[in-house]
Length: 130
Image (cartoon, rainbow, N blue to C red; front, side):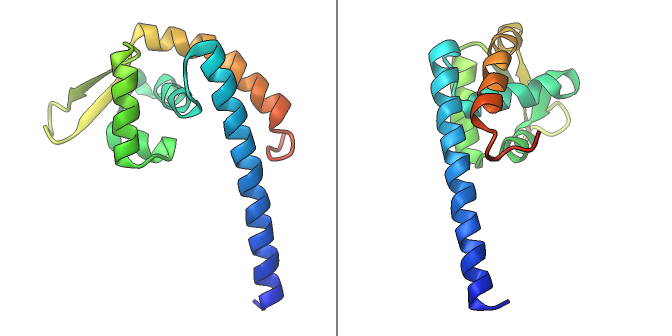
C-alpha cells in the first residue's frame, strides 16, 4: 500500500469519525432532553433489554457497549442510582458482577427507544445503511 492509499484511508477514517461524532451528539442531545439518558446509557439499557433474562456480566456488557471498564462502572453506577439497573455478584464466581435491568429500566428503555430510532433515521442517513 502506497502513501497515496494511506492518505486516502486516513481521509476516509476522518470522515467516518466526523459522521459518528455528529450522530452521537444528536443522540446525546435528544435522549437527554426527552428521557434523561445519554446515548451510552441508552445503549447499555438496550443491551440488557435484549439479553437473556435482561442480565449480563459486566465484562460482556462492556464489550457489547464498547466502553472501558472504568467508564462502564461509572455509567452503571449512575443507572443504578436512578433505579434503572441492579448489580449483583455471580453466585459461582464472586469476582464477576452481573448487571440486570429493573422494571423502571425496562420502562425507560421502552420510552426512549422511539426517540433513538427517530434520531438514527433522521440524522444517520449519511453513515448508516438502510
